[in-house]
Image (cartoon, rainbow, N blue to C red; front, side, top):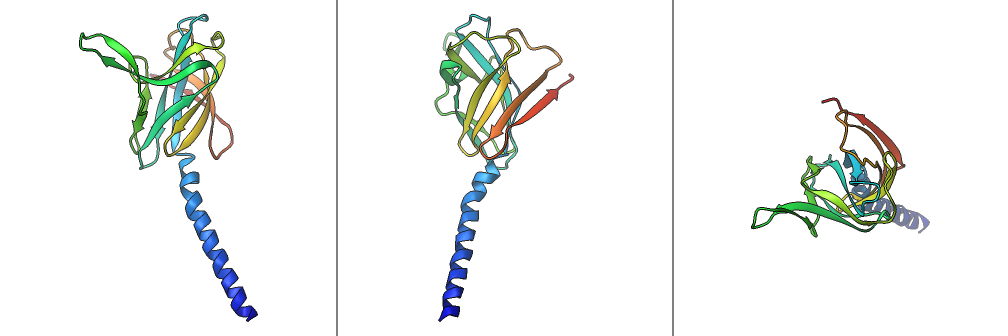
Length: 181
């Protein structure tokens, strides 16, 4: 009788461990599939009421993902934006409600004149060289918290920067990148 009970308990725990592993694997696996490179935010001046963030988002997974939203306390509104050409040939910024798709093993380039993150109603003046905090929210990878530098002027040709970020399941870590073109 006791032997039968022990076998049942062992069987139950084996199944429980299996299901826990199955449920947690996608969550843990997605934590490091998104890499953020060359991130910075730019405003036209210290007194500007709006700003934009640019970066390269690399999906290292073979599965596609989608940047759904972005959050930050730095502005009243933070939105994903793109530029579209109107019927009269004028380029206009528009909010992208459905987010930006990032193909498996693909790259999403957030850049001036294209897809970008828009901050409207800035809560404080920007200071060149300081950093802001923001959270990128992905469909599969979840939330990624970033600290990205503020550049009030056009980017330098050295394209050197650093940023810190955390994935939803890891510790804060910092990257320093220097690109020589």
